[in-house]
Image (tube, rainbow, N blue to C red; front, side):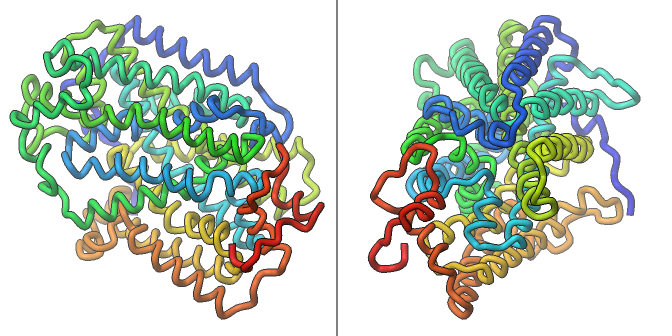
Length: 562
């Protein structure tokens, strides 16, 4: 078997003005330089700063970081792309990603902060008293960071093509050159600054991306006569002129796939380590809860705008380039930059289109930062310091963390040279993994004190197997020359890679609960930790459930189960 090499022609968006543009290039280079400076100013030398920013982030700043951390290239570019390419089906992403944050707010944010750890695998390892469970969670976290970041690298590179042109360096194509350049900048500032610098950068990146996106939406809507003050509603007037593939439900995809996708995105949101770790960067459960509220509000500003941007871009594409649907129709590469393409086709000033493009790059870099911090902390803190070398010094842990960031950057860059799917689809695979393997462990670990080590190990293994099977069935053929298409269409129909959590999560819940019921209950100390996560008594700032239990025995909630 041999790996396929990327085809430049398939990754150049049709209609996009791919050429070097001086002012947008200066804008983007200045923005990237700013990220590096912030990373250097807030560089860290200890593990507390490296992994949880010293638990010193306030609720509004953490809300902005949640927004930037969350709104990746998949949100900024990919969501509008999916709506443009597949119409009603794309709304599954708006519904799934938004609903997930409500579940986080109600059921997990404050409880995770009360438990009080450094990383998501740290929670799994200590809650279930198992280094094996910790290792599985750590490897899953690393894998999520890798799969998720491929889509971000693709988004950065496609937008970079618009700004810097088709610059082939070192024998690479223009697209490949942009992948290498953007990823090098991202890895550079992350390896210096850790979580502290990443969080400060995320607040700046949020401002850049939301201003760029909303300014682009209003400008495109106004100059083309689509909208005036409320493009989020006014875009509905285009339904009568857009193709039925855009406005009618389930023309492209089935009702079942819509449900599977939306469900996987909901549970995946609640299982993503780089999302959950944000609750560890604040000093109390109250700050964790309020930062989630702020973050959800910041996210909704963009999510409510994406369908309008998709409608405007679709109409401009059909009027000026060609048919959106059918053969050949709009390519996935053009769809992935529909936000930038719409601004360009509106004949807006070049510097303004460059600003819209810069917002896409900021969104992608912010999310890669969160993913790589979560992935590297899983390797350094959870595997190296907790399993391989318990006597590791802080300096050794930070060094291993930085090397892990570099390793993640290298393998992500290599995989992004020939991406297997559009941005949002690539990201969705990571959501299915997080939903199938980690979400049940977090939810049951916080809400059912009888969940034990044996149940967790059986559940996580089951979830991992169910996630891998459709990935082999649908995604592997894109990378292996001897496999031309999906191996089993029937399996792809009922257990799609993009929505495999719909099948996996119920099965994992049943396996975890069943095995826990027939094996030994957790010890009383573990049960007290779970009860402390739900105690009506507020804990002191910077205090964790473990500290509360060790000092006063914790809250003894009547009824046993939390």
